[in-house]
Every structure is written in structure tokens, then in C-alpha cells.
Image (cartoon, rainbow, N blue to C red; front, side, top):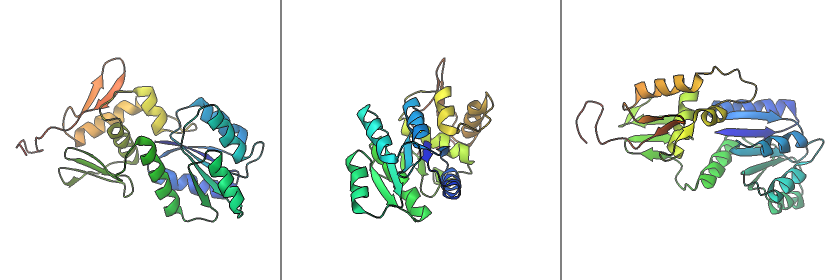
Length: 229
């Protein structure tokens, strides 16, 4: 999942970016409101973490313009402003949640996960498909009850494919969701991650869709040792 972070405080921004990346999110970081609006309008953003006190364009105006243009991306507002009017104004113009500074990183991540679940129409915190279970909060995945040893990218890719419920995703779209702007990405990076996941899961579970990319089908009722459930 790809998150846009709009925060002009370098120290705080670095801390948030590090925490989000450790939670297997791809992060793009901008430091002013105009840059945030341009990035949102460019698309391929799953959620925005937005400071209100941004230079060039404040966070309230960013939200106004995003919502006025029909943009529905979830927006989590961060602000050191203590007045309740600032909080209510942010929510009234279209923010989805509000977190005051200073805040606990664990709470930030929990709110991010909750907003992503809500935008995907999911009530449950875990993703399940047959014998495959993924817990975004704990960054764990199990296959037939067996813990899977996944890299951060493999975990992010598995989460992305599971959330699509079998719908094909283009390689380019997957890549944009897995990597930030500034990362140097090999042309076959997505294929390599898919190959590694296939080795750890049921053969054929991640299906190649010719001319498009990949889709993940529901696992069969066959255990890894070949016996039926």
C-alpha cells in the first residue's frame, strides 16, 4: 500500500516515514501543501497523512481542493494546533481522522490501518483466504497454520493481492504500490517478488494474467503435504 506523507518538520517526517516503511508501506514524502496536492492528483495513493501547518498551501486548503475535485483518498490529519475548531474544521472539510501532536507511533499506525480497512470495505483487521491468513498489525502471515517467513516487500505484495479478491493487477500498478518515488527499482522487481512468494505458497496460487500482470486466486483445499483438508 502506498502512503503520501505531507510534513514539513524534517525530524518528525523522518520518524513517520521510517515507522510506515517498517510496517510494510511504501511512502512518498512531500514537505509543502502544493506538492501534496500535486501528488494526490497524480493518483496511485492509498492514504494521505497530512500536517495542517504546511508551507505554500495549508492542509485545510489541500483537503478542500481534493474533495472539491471528487477525490476520495482517505486523509489522516496531523496537527499541533490545540483548538477544537481546527480539528472540527479539518473533519468538516473532508478529513477522515485527526491525530494531535505529539502522538504515539503505534496509535498512528493503528489509525492508518483502520482507515485503509474502512476504504476497502473491510471490518476485520486480518485478511483471510482459505488457509492463508495475514495480520497487517503484527506483520505476520500463516499458511495452513504455518508461519511464513516473508520480506517486507513480499508481505506488502501478498497484502495487496489478497485485498484485490482475485482481480488482476498490472505489474506497473503493483510496482507503484510497493515502491516510493525515490527508490531505484529494477524492471523485473515485481516478477522476482512473485517468484519468491510462489515458492512459499501453493503452486499456482498467484496467477499470471497474460498481458496484464498478476492475480491471486483462493487457495485450494489441499494441504502442503498433498492431503485434502
